[in-house]
Image (tube, rainbow, N blue to C red; front, side):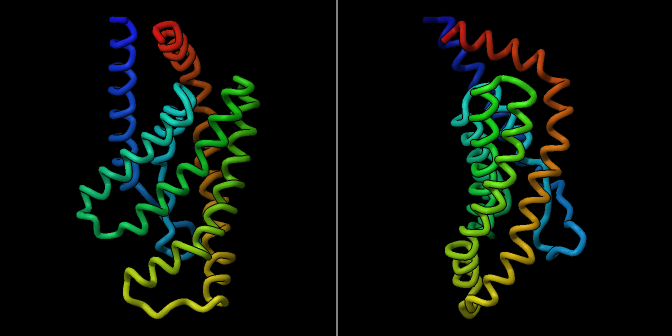
Length: 196
């Protein structure tokens, strides 16, 4: 019982640390050439991916939530729509990765998950932007409602390629990091599963 409590506390500390690192990584962002400058790539999904692989998809979602809550507090809640969009994109990306990794427990499973996550994030965010996020931005900023043509162009020329490229870039960075950290990840997972 005591060992289980220590394990849960250790898990909470790791998730809080990952959430904090993730929030800092949100500020280290850069635009992609030939895409709208307001769409910026950052590596804040990496700690959430580590949490999802180390524990469960829910742990990754918790890190995503903590990152965005901390970001909202730090920035003074100036852009709640963007924060909601960031959370949605992160969840759409990390959940397929962690599910496929936990199913196959191999580097090949991880790579399949990263490809699936990039596709699901790109398609999912395109749909969400068209129906929810872009109209919410228009309302929040006090702009006129976007026409269907403007929304379609924004999604096809900006949102879709951006999220696909972001998934690829994060995946390319994450694979060597995962290979380097794999012994530590396996050790932590064994410790937490034996304490559960």
